[in-house]
Image (tube, rainbow, N blue to C red; front, top):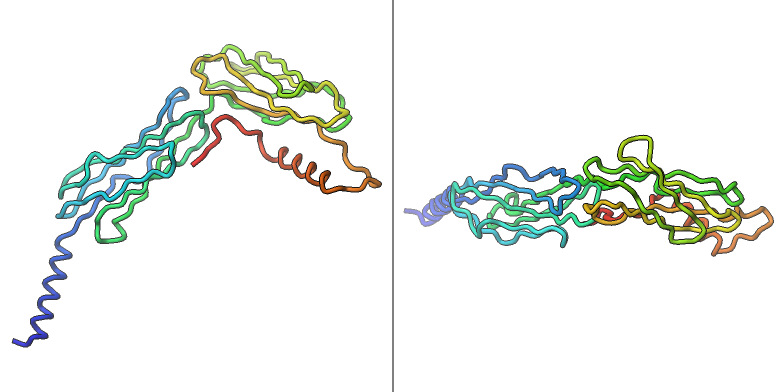
Length: 258
C-alpha cells in the first residue's frame, strides 16, 4: 500500500479522534443581575455550567476583576455530563449605585473560543439616602438666603433624624422633616457671600444599619473678573475648578469602583 495513502488515512483518523474527544463547558448564563437589600453586606452570583463534551474539563484559573470580589469553583475538574457552578461574592462595603464586576474563567479546552469565559455580576445597590442636589452655591454678593438639600431615606432604613456638619465655619445647616415620608430638608446658609468659600457637608443618619456617612457640598463663588482685571494662571485654575465642581456631584461614600 502506498506510504502517502497510509499517512493520509492516519491523519484522517487522528482528526476524527480529536473531534470525537472534546471537552466543553456549557454555561447556563454568563451574566447575573442582583439587587441586594440596603443592609446586605454581600451580593452572591451563581454561574452554573455543564460539561457537554466527552472528556474532562480542567480549570486553569478563576480570576475576579477586583479585590472586593472573590470567585471560586466547586471542583478542579468536571467529568463528562457533570454539572457545577462558579460563585462570585461581591463585598458591598459602602458602595452604592450600579456595580459591575467580572470573573474570568480559563479551562484546558483546546478550542480558544471555549477556553476562556468572562462572567459578569451586576449589582444595583440602593443608597441609604438619596441626596438632591449634592451641591448648593451662591454667587459672590448674592443675598445669603438658605438653600435646600433634600435627603430621602430608603423606606426600610428606619432613620429618625440626620446630623449635618460643615467642614468650614462659613456655613450653617439645619435639618427639618420633609413633606414626604422618610424625607428630610437640609437648610444650608452661608454667613456671608463677600468671600469665596467651599465646604463639605457630612450627613450622618442615626440608623444603626447605616454603612457610612453621605456627603454634599456648599460653595460661595469667587467674584467674576472685571474687564480691566488681568487673568492670571491661578485665577484660570480657580475658575476651572469651580466649573468642574458645578458639573460634577460631590463624592459620596461608596462611589463605584472596579
